[in-house]
Image (cartoon, rainbow, N blue to C red; front, side, top):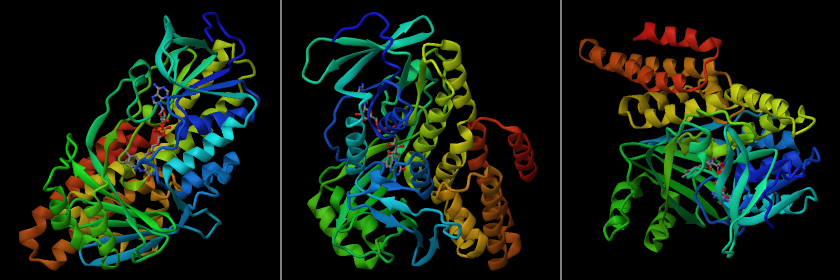
Length: 462
Ligand SMILES: Cc1cc2nc3c(=O)[nH]c(=O)nc-3n(C[C@H](O)[C@H](O)[C@H](O)COP(=O)(O)OP(=O)(O)OC[C@H]3O[C@@H](n4cnc5c(N)ncnc54)[C@H](O)[C@@H]3O)c2cc1C
């Protein structure tokens, strides 16, 4: 179908039925809007991304009425994290005193198919399997898209009152709607451990030491996902010596009960890699368009925060759009989008700062030890840190306080354990390093009145 004029019947056209796009379609459909979703591949994907949904993300799904998306896919409840550091470990449960949900591990493809199945049954959503090739622009307004249906040769076009671009981490269209400052800071290598036991069933495991960090969590009742970080702009070379390298570098760091499964996975050699980006959100306002999901904003996946951030955004954008009675009204629509861009950091900034902050910490030997010792104190040191990681607590000041307190605690331990004169300089460096990690992260989030005070406090520390 070709449509060169304004098709007044399409309220919202969504580019990409991934985690953000498909959930947005499902949520907006409840308001009766007429929605078209264009997705290049509707088959179940086999990926290593988006397999641990933090409790904060589950909470947002619940607020939208969509926790059933987690049903019937052998998803595993996740109750907290075991932090492994050298030969020690410390278990931190997610908060659950006030009825907070747990997290869930699952295969991302199965979860996404549940969301897609739902939108395919909605009468006011039309799903087209095809690849969007171009955003149609009229000056500063996006009026729709051109696309090619799967296996078709000809291009078609559709116009809509609102185009939502949510084409994921490798977005082709983000440069039209934002200043694309994405930086690859490494790659995750994914392996699947089958039929094994980890120290704590139904928990995530963060493994730190003199090797690159690993995260391990259950994704079905019989399998655990292992993600190993490879720093740098190039993916690891999966050549002949790679299996030996994996064994030499990581086998001993894997908990003993899971080592046979690790060895089997390495021997099987079904490796998958995916780039890890950092992309602070810097949208460019265009009429009738909005950028969402990883196309807009990315953080390191070490803390599994991407889907939680996406669901926060989906809910916020949908709520703002509820106030728009007529999507043909460009002013009303523009106001709702502007408000979304101006307020979305309230739902996502702690997730973003913590993800890249912790990534900095695990590569700094002193800070990584400090982090382990700090959370091992239990009490609020573990509980509040975990509530931030879970995406349940969004208090930026609390995050900053813990981050700096962690570095100070580590510095103090170092001074107590060794000759003060010798290590005092190193201890000061530790606190400076922590400030150096967190300051740019704080600056890249949208400023709010608290930011200035926090930056002043950080300056006083260094
Ligand atoms: C290695 C890694 C591990 C991660 N692990 C976790 C985790 O455990 N927990 C977590 O919460 N987050 C995790 N994330 C982040 C999470 O996966 C993302 O935040 C989330 O998937 C973003 O959703 P999205 O809808 O923006 O992108 P996607 O889910 O990737 O969806 C984009 C969709 O757009 C479609 N598309 C793209 N281009 C076009 C086009 N031109 N036309 C039509 N369709 C198109 C794609 O086919 C896809 O379906 C991880 C990320 C990485 C890199």
